[in-house]
Length: 542
Image 1 (cartoon, one colour):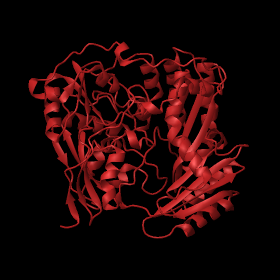
Image 2 (cartoon, rainbow, N blue to C red):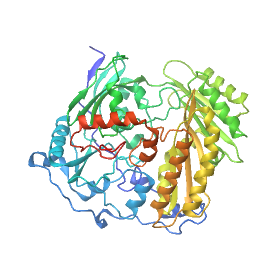
Image 3 (tube, helix red, strand yellow):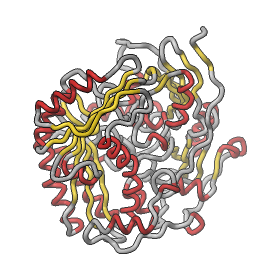
Image 4 (cartoon, helix red, strand yellow):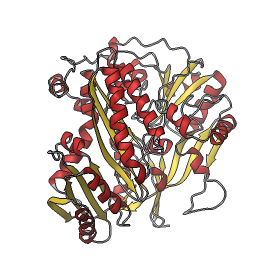
């Protein structure tokens, strides 16, 4: 078929990636900028924690060796082991800065094809070696850190060598893509065909398709197709019990979905190697606007009206007064709603005007100008200021960590009727936990990352001064309080960051027990040796 293309090329070159912190090491904040940031947090440390060199690290000895037939796929190099020890949560960054890499894997594997994955799993199962699937290491929930301490060795399996778009079906607008494809390289392979996956999480440049699928990741778009689930047509998964490949269909009512078993399974049931993904034509028409509110409750009502209007904006970010001020978007106790619309086929000016009118009906005042043009449109200044701050936030978090400033973020979702009480409870109860842990007042901000007709997805940021050497214990106490507060108010433990190990206590309370029994049974059937990412989602034995 002329409109179906098999591809054999692809980008296998991964970008430079920090072994200890977020993203591009060249973007890390210098010492002086770290100190400038910390000066805004009373009680913060006066000097930046030095970044240790790889050569200075004391890694645990390697306990296992791969057989000769697999030796070319694995590495015991200290840089590989250090870079695959932790994800990018605050507690991960702090431990790396202090040179604590006790959880380092023994070996790192770099499979190049599915047969390699099968062979590595066969060896690991026979040798009692735990296998931690690894996309690009951007987990912020302890999803790639081995903590079980019951296996004879640990292998981190890095899928970055399997990053190609293998096949494109232009007629059905879908593509078969390897799981190790990093966001930018995935899109680069689709762009010549005028297509896009249209999934752009904050970690886009430093995360993979397989990671998005395994964690049920949320993208940048605030309504309609918010999660990778919505874009998944079929999965191919390697398990110790065999290979599972679902049928690509536009829809099916044939029993429980096999894809749903593996979406969000976080590598504990199998390793996703390929997926058929639903694509869209690349947008041509774009428009954006910002609306300022004097009252946050009025802004929340406006966003609810937008979410229930059926207009489906691509961007619908509500920043509370603290978040708006921190991002440099607005001050004076005002909240800001950033709206954006786009289409591949028709102008969007009218839709944006309807959205702005809804916001105005709830007390909002539009600011700046909107743009509606081709791909070069950049939106108004408030939207651009927010976008710049959004992309810079992880590097700022790392800079604050070097100054022993506690920085915790947690995201959730709840129904609209429960949000006002949840918002107040987070400020009250998590604020109290911060005072108990640090002796200081916390800065607590909130924004909506995604919105639905029945509720928002609030994303909270907590910042407070910590004590050097006690940062992890303080962070753990604050995280525990946040999980408790979410559970008390019937909000989900996570909207788009996955469960991993850090969210396990909250997930254990949220998950129905019969479902837990079913998960453990699936684990036993698919991974009888218990080698796949032990400890995420559930404990296999109980």
